[in-house]
Image (cartoon, rainbow, N blue to C red):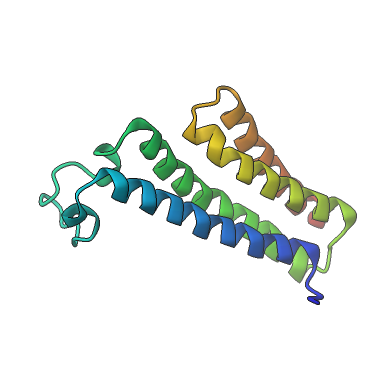
Length: 139
């Protein structure tokens, strides 16, 4: 059994969530687009519009949700690094890590299906959880 701090375990799970999102984006895009577009080199001008602009609205939202998690994962990774390197793991930081992951998991269908305002509230929840982890380490 792993003895990693909870925050590091959740970071690993968030990384696996990103892998799942890449897979979901790839599958949905490949179902909609010609293989020469998805398997080709994607040279500028060769494809016309970017691939994300050539898919259905839902698949486009799946693309954007994946990109958004890359962005959110940067801040969460910083939060986990600060907590871990600062040896500041606590019940608060562990809870915030789980809240981040839960919000990011729910964010995928919320974005894909256009759940308003839930998508934005889930995004904000993940952001606040990451920020609280950093603040808890500093104070």
